Length: 87
Image (cartoon, rainbow, N blue to C red):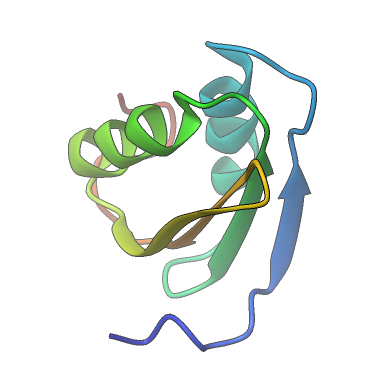
């Protein structure tokens, strides 16, 4: 897995609760190119699941999903998929 590829952009959604992390991620991805990597940080415990479902529906590749010290870290490779606004 290419989870160690450096992200092109980091999106800090700390303090936001559902559905904000997914909505902010959708907006960020809409301005990115296929192949770009976005890393999302969130403190909402459901963000890991919500962002995984978003990636599945939007056709993006989920490279990493883990929680460290209460912060969810999700790394996404943008694909041409069904974006923008898919999900």
